[in-house]
Length: 114
Image 1 (tube, rainbow, N blue to C red):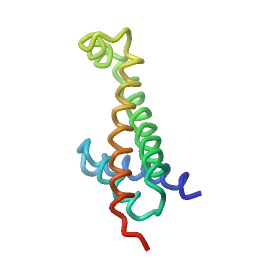
Image 2 (cartoon, helix red, strand yellow):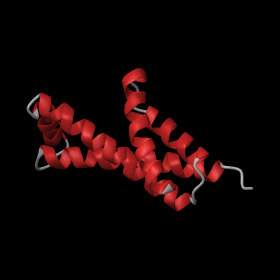
Image 3 (tube, one colour):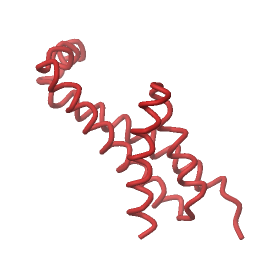
């Protein structure tokens, strides 16, 4: 239950943080704080951070990409020599998930043990 709660909290709070702060690194702060306050093992915290932020970035990228008919993501995929914009969006979600997972892992490791 804590695992699912962490995933949902990270995704929702990251979306709210992006609205108000409009900085990409708010995902790292949110993941760190959620993992710090919800007690889990470091491995589960990493996985929760990865899944929560990857899901958020995937949804956000798909929403923003659909609005402009995939123009920017197609050009970025060409720049990075990727076969299509879909793979570029997947790579974006993976990188966001990696940032969220590492931040959550750090939050879980710094948590004082009782």
